[in-house]
Amino acid sequence: MKLDLSGKTALVTGGARGIGASISRTLAAAGAKVVINFNKSGEKAGKLRDEIRSEGFESEIFQADVSEPDQVDRLFQFIRSYSGRLDILVNNAGMIRDALLLAMSAAEWDKVHDVNLRGAFLTTRIAAELMVLKHYGKIINIASVSGIRGGRGQTNYASAKGGLISFTRACAVELAPKGIQVNAVLPGFIETEMSTRARRRAGEALLDRIPAQRFGNPQEVANLVLFLASEFSDYITGQAIPVDGGLSVS
Ligand code: NAP
Image 1 (cartoon, protein in one colour):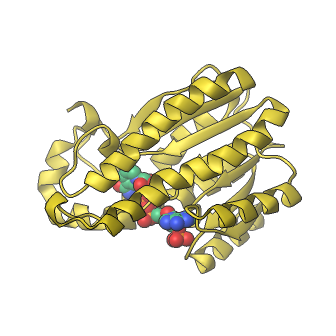
Image 2 (cartoon, helix red, strand yellow):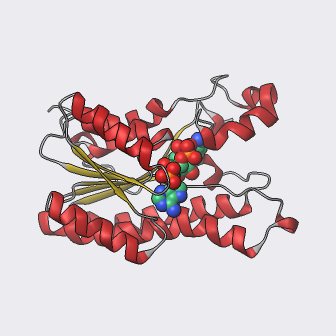
């Protein structure tokens, strides 16, 4: 058995920067055709596609806000015409709008739920339709350790990511008989733009809470995604696996 994704098509939402960019690169290097979805980072998406192609792999980019049903429909129309199939879906698009509960607006609550949770529902619903046709599929949801532990100022984000973990389990039960595995990856503190403020604000105190005594890097998340996207994980479904240097068990 080889960790080889040749002949497979993957979609990575929010795949142009941060953790998503590492996932896009890693799946492409394993042989998958990778559709990089972006919302605002068009320039970064174009550069990443060119980089992947220059290494001899296949990639395309497509702009869509994953929280908007019409835009998600257009994204999948594009995938149908580009490849006619989808084998791997990585729901990576995410955002934070931290605020203490008493100061949180309904708009901040909704926006975070719309991108992190509703977005995953909208893409998964259509992806599953395509995957059922081939009786094959891997859906990987990038949740967060915040979805299983409380986080100050993160009632919106923690509940959205907790919801994404429950969504993962319910999808896994429905889709396992159709040959589709659905798993969640739970990053801890990973060095990207999203965690910059938290890492700066909490500094050394934050590192003390992480048994590995360092922050993670995006590639370490992509490594688990690659495993879950491959046939090595065929009997694993409905799981929520942290990549967090031990944070969630400390
Ligand atoms: P990031 O650097 O802030 O990147 C966020 C990504 O999400 C960007 O590619 C962005 O695309 C995309 N995105 C945001 N809103 C979108 C929308 N409406 N439609 C489509 N794409 C959208 O964050 P990151 O650290 O790489 O985070 C990636 C995932 O890991 C997220 O789900 C995040 O919640 C999760 N996570 C991160 C950490 C961490 O420590 N970094 C920890 C736990 C979980 P554009 O730039 O194109 O708009």
